[in-house]
Image (tube, rainbow, N blue to C red; front, side, top):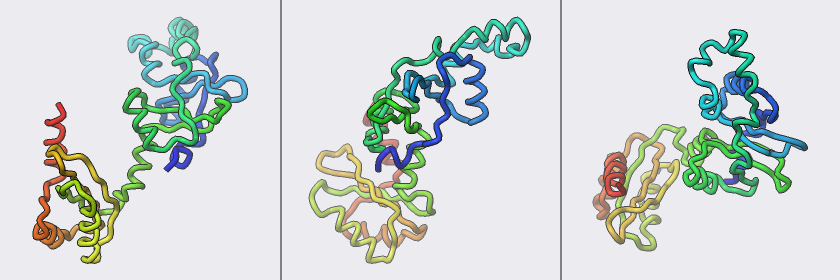
Length: 225
C-alpha cells in the first residue's frame, strides 16, 4: 500500500512569516500536531510541531499571552525562527512500510508527502499509519489473535491456513514474526471469530505450540533488552 492511499490530502500549511499564535490556533482548531511550512508554488521549506511551539513559548508567558505587553513581545516570534528547515519528506511512491521504518529511524511523528518538484501533496502521520495498518490487518472487526510457534521451513504457513479454513473460519490477517529460538517462527493469525477452542485443540494435535500472544510480546521484549 502506497502512502498516497493513506496520507491526509487536505493539508493545513502555514507561511514562514506567520506568528507563532497563528500556528498554535491552527493546530488547536484542526486538532493537528504538525504544520508544513510552504513557500512559492506550495513547495515545502520547513515544518513546525506543537513541541516546537511549546519550546518557544514558556508556560508562564502562555498563561498571560492575552495581556498587551506579553502578547506584543511574543508576536515577535515567527515561524521561520522555530521551524525545522528542510525537514524529512517522502514521495508518493513510498509504501506505508517505508514510512513506518523511516519514522522509527528518525523519530519524527509526521512526514510531508511531496512530488518530484518538492510541492506538498499530503502529509502522513503516526495516526494515518495506525489507521492504514488497522485496515490492512482487519482488526476493526471482532476476532481472536492466536500465536503459533512453527519450524522455519517451507509449507508451514499453508498447513496452518488450510487447517483453520477447513473449520469454516475467516481470516482478518496473518502475520509472521521472528522467534527467539533458532529455526523457528511465530505465526499470528487473526481469526474473525471468538470461538477458537476447537481450532486450538486441532493445531496442538498437529504438533504446534500455541502461546498467549501477550506472553510472546513480553518475552520477546525482555530478550531484546
